[in-house]
Length: 304
Image (cartoon, rainbow, N blue to C red):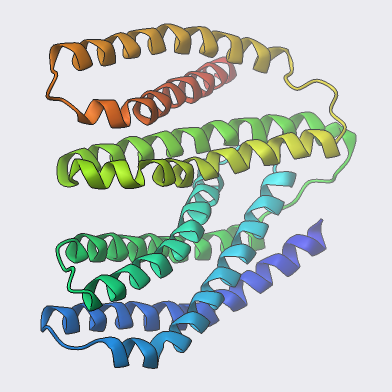
């Protein structure tokens, strides 16, 4: 495991340096594309000229993200203590990876819409594109932190005596990722509600929710995989089972209150059509936030 993490860390460091140039290049191209559209210029020749180079840069970005995800997962596997930082890096890595595909889709839509004379929604698409670049930039910063962490970390042996510690660490990291996922999901839903027309929300709400849930789904899948590989027969130890049971009961009560609020809003405010579109993801992210927060609180309280 020491060798695997070392190789993965070095690969991530090399790809970070190489892909950073591609990231800068792509960002400059997006700005130039935006400027040309603002000036009403023909972008067909420009798009054809740079498309190959943008594609190469995107491939480098993807390789770097995959290497960083591998390094994070290997580190989480052997960790004897939970880490908010590493859980956040994992969460950020998945979001940033998915947004690379979103960058490609956005650029394609912008070029097609501008060529067809449909310029109404282009500004909002550029805002999303720039937000995506900001996420990538933040991830680059945290990837450097990840490389530093893995280069200094003293890794534990893989003996049976550390199984309980590793199981507890990854269990808590799952809760951290659940909190990050729910907070980002709620923030994006609020932003969409304030600044996005209802038709656009209806069009993209399902895809958006799938993207937002990917980090949590992947960390849960990774936790289950580790359980199977380590041949841990009990899914939860006694303390984890108590925490999950209490958190589940409180989440159940909270979810009933949340659904009651949604029911009143939908029936008392007939013009509030937005709730009919976002009620389920809103309910899910709030419930996930309550559940993961309570599990963490109970665990940390017991450890004091």
